[in-house]
Length: 323
Ligand code: F6P
Image (cartoon, rainbow, N blue to C red; front, side, top):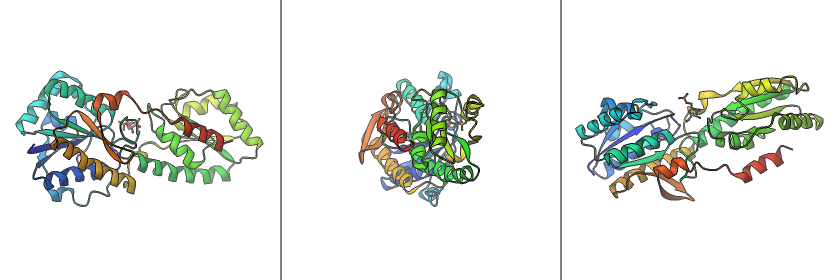
């Protein structure tokens, strides 16, 4: 293994740069040449690949986003697109690839691997935290802190005006951000895709809060909740919750930016280092993660398919503490 490529793909997440830095520095330490592939699979298809020096990753550990850029690439879904990617891997004589991303990234890697048998190691980087085989994905902790900081501010104004706020957080298919941030801000209710939302039960809960003299109400809504997004749920609540003047805030992409937290920087550094060592040890087609403080290797297919289940204890905790 003399030449390794690295890319970031899918939705970016804070800490991806720290992971890129760790990959590059671990390669240098082992006298391996390292190549940055720009814009994920798109760059692989277009041959947008450049050799990186150790100094290229100086002063990036603290920066959000990704210096390698990211993209969601439709062409890689096609056999012809993957063939072009393979040809570029051969042209640049890459012996292995480190892919930093989420489930879409690893689905692509898994298909590609079956067709072309190029050694691939994945690093979990997604604020959604919805991969099996790691306690945390890179960016999740920072996103949680961003949500908590924002909702604390919303709570101030909600409380001044005795208002109900529906705050929408990211998570198309997963409620990890909503559940954990909801507990962190002391939300009155948390609506996630993994559990069924009954509007009448939500109304009862909000009404009972009013009777207990709660002055403000925060409901955290994962964008992919089965009852709809925050605006749709606000519509469904119309007329049913007259006690509260209702407002909606969609936090959106601010959750994906910002300087990574200490936890994300350390996690990303550890995983970048582990990914290169895994390639050097002959591993392939696995995602590296940290489970109970130990490095763990999970086949891509398992990491994607066995979406981590929501922690039932946390659901109960949220329920009890919001009574
Ligand atoms: O996968 C991460 C994520 O931030 C999801 O939570 C969100 O639904 C999606 O990406 C948004 O993607 P885009 O930035 O492509 O609109």
